[in-house]
Image (cartoon, rainbow, N blue to C red; front, top):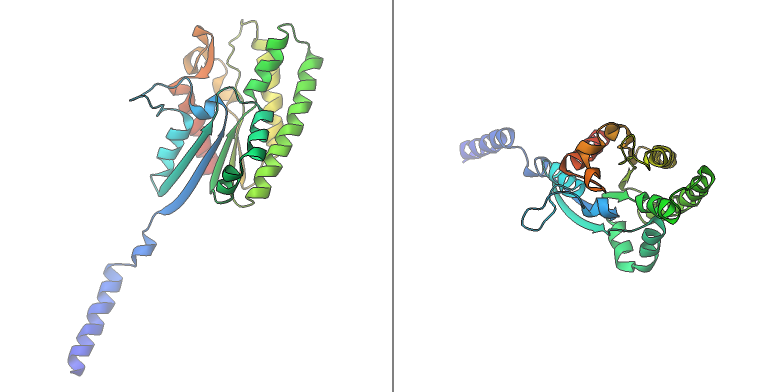
Length: 237
């Protein structure tokens, strides 16, 4: 009887060495919520079966799924401005509750604020751009404070702006002034848990290769979205 017990104990010991507990191998569970404008929605990326699988949200989700199980919710709304996103957070209690349990939150916003400024006056002066930037800075601060109040622990990606207008385009100078200033606003919010992704440098000189600007569409193409995801991966790792 004692011999059988010793054998059983030995078998158990060997099995623990050979087969470590399953929990050690189990993937992490991540909830990823994406907030923002048409970039979050993936406009400009190619479609497969009516799905925009090459936008930055699907691409980044695919990357996360290499090591984790991921639940993703995409709240990308084309045309959304910073004030619109802030209003959405204030009005949608269900969204606020979901944000409280998110592990990763990404925010792409600000591009439509810029477009509103230049469409209101195509010869907009620097003073007007600076005023728009000051208003935007306040709104972004309120947005960020709201997210951090809801969820102090989540990794938050703040996606900056690129200049879609190549050299020679009538709006190139406005874009080259506005985008870096906006990205500087985001950089002020950076921390170990708030990751700022600035695609500005990556798009310089490659506007026609990374966007649809030759068709007067400022959105990234598949390659452009991949550039943004590469920056997100670098920041995350």
